[in-house]
Length: 293
Image (cartoon, rainbow, N blue to C red; front, side, top):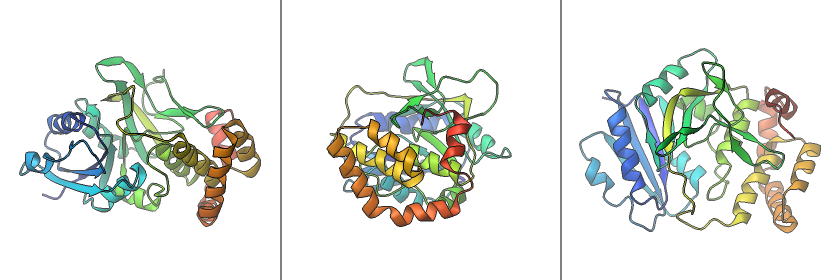
């Protein structure tokens, strides 16, 4: 049976967490027709070595290996191999709770919902839950508390910790920015772009996935790489004066200016392409979510 849902999971040195994630998916998806696409992006800990054999015959499963192309490009690669009409992007260290996938599919059937995500709880502590993310005055993201009103809530950013959308929507949005490096802010840029292109993003506080928030990364991440991604997002989507103000708040200066130069040299045409397709501008986005920009 052809899968209805393609679950794409980029992985890099996840240790035993990826097996916990896959077992939780299998235990909570019920009779839904789904496939799992794991993209092992240059792991050195052997975390994915036996997965294909362990999952043979139980569900449609694919393991793709890449040399370290970064989380955004890894998700795009997984999506390119997907056969489902719905895409779900998950991290390799989440534990979905019962009802999460049918709930996300139900939400996507609601009018005016283009992208949706569940609440994200700290593993083994469901009282600590975030419902989407927002930005501070330095373009850093922070988790939002659960909304007081019932139902789906509009939020500035949906985390790729767990994110669902129709495959056609993903294609219409041109996927994640493949020039984002390693890890960081690819979900923020994708969410911002989706809003500006007229899509509606919602979080469902009634659905939950647990997430393992580690104190140390399983691989090194140069701060300059993260800054590259933040500045690239600002260059692509923010007006010159707002971008100047925000970039001035970042640091150190030489790293920021290097990131800005890289964005100007590689993203000018992409910026013009997005602006030509916009339904909203960044002023609208700032006002919509009362951002300190």
